[in-house]
Image (cartoon, rainbow, N blue to C red):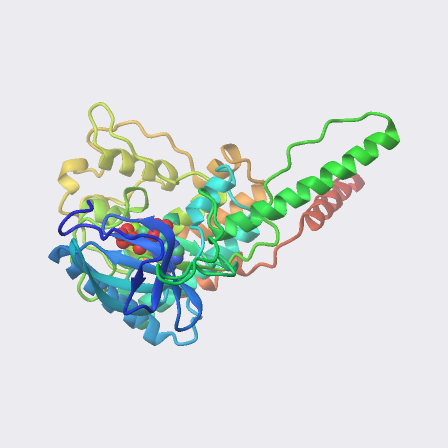
Length: 421
Ligand code: ADP
Ligand code: MG
């Protein structure tokens, strides 16, 4: 892809925009671009430099992304809306052509990396709430004030705020002195690296404590592997990747959203609006809380990925109302006239709250409350889904989180009442 019309090859120390930005290290890449950590010599801050492939179709989509990002940034001067900000944009000419470049605020790891880091076990519910609040704040602003549909919401596109500076001394341009390399391991970004550091310190202290105790007790249990702990991390985050965003008044593409986060009306081609983002939001929230994708459809013998997807939805959410199942351009491919799937006849029913208890070991109470929050957002009827603004008012998001101790106390007192009876 590093040829005419493709990516622009960057080396550490390369400068951009007349020397204003200096490339530090590669942060990631997508289908259309490579993204670099760069030092902004004008503001003395780190930024993310997204360098688009140069062919006209990529330039076109970069222009669209710049338009959307500009609207987002202009409408939110105080950066309160949990959406990525555009700092600057310019053209850069290289051996492969002319590349549109976006300068974005520098963020940390994605929520997907956080889920992986936590070994796919799901995050504690009070952390899930914090992240959900950020995403919904972003969506509310995007939908209501800007009239934009994101169309590709998923854990990968939610980035944590980077609270850690990548390095005290940036790498200077090729002509200047090279001072030191920015920190940052291969796996974790700056946020996860900081957690790792904290954990190692904590583990060292724990080992010291245990060996001290062992000496005093003359033996004892071996030191346990330290639990991965997410305490003390700033869980503010921002929604990124507006490459596929569209104006709510003119939805264009037919097939939007990443498979697992795709709403039923998109599969059935019944037309879509802002509520497609709400569907993806609910799938994302589920994944945060459980560590597993809500729907992971697969092609099978005699049925397509779409059909498996629809079946999985109905197993958890109940049968799709006939009006909806037969109402799309593609309905006839999948459903008979009674609104039953043509090629997948037997569905297992596994309602959300039961799934959370039986498969993911939620307490009955946690499962009930979380399911009460998610179920309305996963309504098959798009117009019945609550808006981001309405979700922000939901009691589940606003409940003050009980600490573990409170919970144990509550359970104990319940048992006590039973015993007294
Ligand atoms: P594409 O549109 O080509 O898919 P993305 O905008 O998704 O590009 O960016 C590609 C990758 O670059 C992301 O997955 C992420 O790892 C990294 N990245 C993008 N923007 C930032 C940012 N602002 N701060 C830090 N890393 C970023
Ligand atoms: Mg991307």
